[in-house]
Length: 222
Image 1: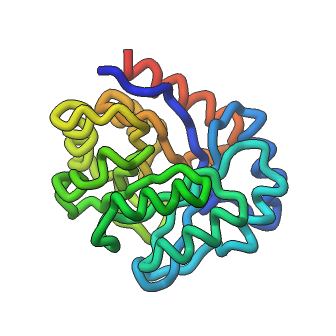
Image 2 (image 1 turned 180 degrees about the horizontal axis):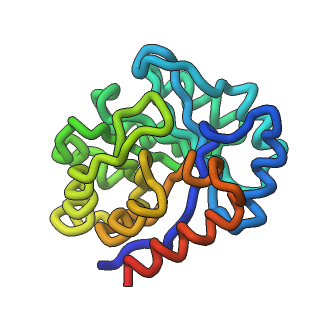
């Protein structure tokens, strides 16, 4: 399997927002590669989270790229806003767009990488029109909307299909329920960008946990 390098992306959904800057520094010192920012609009998912002004503040403090995952029904409008606020990658859901190629092109014109996410119930074939245009595919390993959910192992076959059947050579991200017991299976299937929220920020030493997760992922890849 020829997959890009392993990257660990702690999810800010689980950070203590009263100590946000400290949380950023801790995982950066631990060797994190990205900060994962979960954006929810209360429509596509039944929850609300981080908005553009908060992303602007995070971008001002962060030393790592911001990986913004838009769980929203209007990714074009919000994609532009988050791009202006400092996002490095903007990921939209395949379930809310009719023309993913055009959406990817629009994001790139905004100066950000284009990611395409897929929910657990959605068949992997739905991604076919996006694969030649996306910088990254995000395979959700929980149903989106809330942190702290249990990993859904059945979605690993989507990653295997993307790498094998479709030959996708870009980044494949997995998000949801990724922790010490599950990260190895994700890496072995072909995922290389691994999002962990409570597994990192709920640890006694979040920085050390980043290193543990990376080690397990790299060992599983072989």
